[in-house]
Length: 194
Image 1 (cartoon, rainbow, N blue to C red):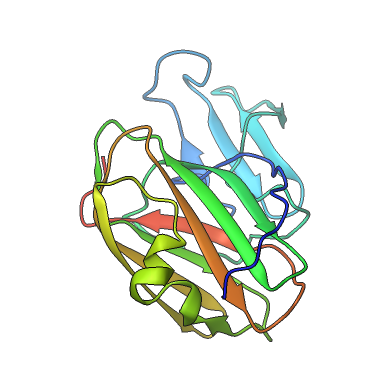
Image 2 (cartoon, rainbow, N blue to C red):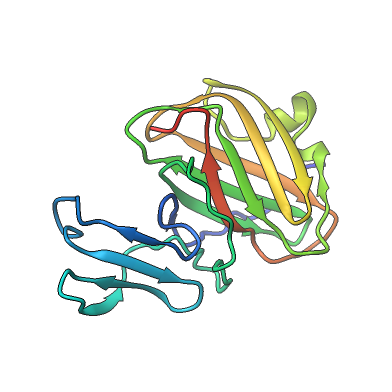
């Protein structure tokens, strides 16, 4: 059952190739990141490394969720889509909210969102199944259905349809605990990523 709750602002996090403690090579890009490699660890943030080997702290968004959690152990996917998480909250009435934006050049086809929850958390699928569960999700009209499941500590939301560039999906989920840590290891894959 959906319960109302105050929407809290969360730090924006750029996911995709920088997610969960990976190193990304930006040497083929033009602009500020040209010739640099950004290494993100799970605890200390990111450091930019120039072609000459010098490193410096980097305040640019990393793939790490800025909620104090350690995402160094997140699984990686070669099919990750370029997204930015704009909300990641859990209120005190069993409800979690994750919103992300498609930052790719094209539409995501059948996006799949995966995230990790604490060990004792059980997803209640009432928040994502049937017509009411679909109505509880904030999706554009180009998304026509959603299904959800849980495997261990990983929750998976699979959407049917397309998310245009700049479009957002706002996920609502409900669990067995009235209060818990926010989701970690948030990743998006799709049949086709821009």
